[in-house]
Length: 193
Image (cartoon, rainbow, N blue to C red; front, side, top):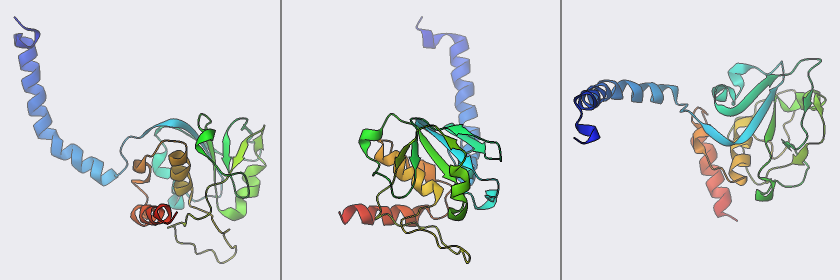
């Protein structure tokens, strides 16, 4: 008797088949509605969020429970040893594939409050910047502070950094409202090279 011919195995396969048919639509609907499929990243990511960052506007919020991504909420006495982490910032050497193997550190805040988060960082991070020709799809509406040229939404920066490091994972953007516009602009930028 072959292993699959055993009566218990046949019963189990039949049950799983019926279960699968019954729940397939419900599972697909749930995944579509939540639009945030399970994401496992090879690149380790740490996100430090400023306490004044509104979660309702946080583009990284849908990634909270994803494997490989750790979130910290900064506070007055918070310190993070960023030694050997890639710290994405402006006016630094360009991030390249040669930087792979290092975890990524994202400071999640409005541009105006980034210096407060930077003061929480100790150690020797690898300061890197993303290519300056990438344009954000996130609408900028600040009336009190001008965002820097080349500044991206946190989720956009994370996606581009991981892509440069060899992990092209568009599912990171599944819950990002401006996903299609951003990817379209990114494709246009790459084809213009």
